[in-house]
View (tube, rainbow, N blue to C red):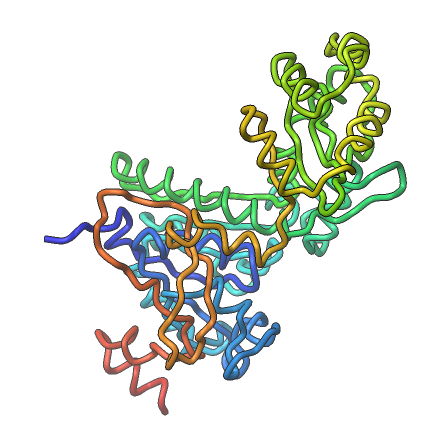
Length: 390
């Protein structure tokens, strides 16, 4: 018998859309769960229209919905509600990312569903959580990034704020919901009861801000944008310009600092002046200028080779093309490349969760076409299939 993925046999009913919920269920599908994606008739998930489109398939949608099954249901229509409730009978988990109260208005809030399907685990993502007084406000990723303070520490200087380059609020809340679902599935083995998991996007981002929140809690002052500097670690620890490209050097302790001074080389007076790590913390700009004056004499590749030979952590700042071309990425199979004749012949990132004992070559599957799996999903209830046709 081949290796069985950990969530084999678990069925997830996914009524979420765009990013946070679909990212959660994508991770669970890659762990072996059957994910039934419920979409709006006629248009489906909004992200089906997000570019780039190849052969009419959204790369954005494909990256988050591979390996799932699609069925179109209008939860305001009686016939489709009957089908939805049939699916709830056999589902282990429901995932939604509507604003709070939306599922209640449909008649599918937590209290109603728990009374009817006591083993069902209910996973919810919203901007501020179901219990928060502000929970009715719209919560886009950029709004949460602004409110959480993460923008205020991302950038080069006060007022020069940047959005984190990925949708960190959506992605982190999806990841935290996946963790909560796994914990609840484990707990249900003992209790036999499902429970609700309430994930707030705002909480998710704040939980990632380990240094900024700690700094405020201990000092009473809010840190500003830190660029590539790591305040808790003495420099040189960040970005540096060479003659050709920008590189990262992470010489964040006394031993590595002394090695760097020898390797560049930097003067003995420079070493003596900044030997104390607390002095280095207060002198980031001056240290950077002196180091870059030396680095400008050679290309990045030469410096990387030299610094690595001395055991100093460093790297060239890759663009995306270079990152996905790294040997470790290629050899690890993180990018799945479908067959050329596929409707979506572009490489897509797989889940980073690996199981070394799994020696099977697995195809994560493609993104479902809208309503593609309707007959398969309803195959156990032919009368509902006929009803839906009528």
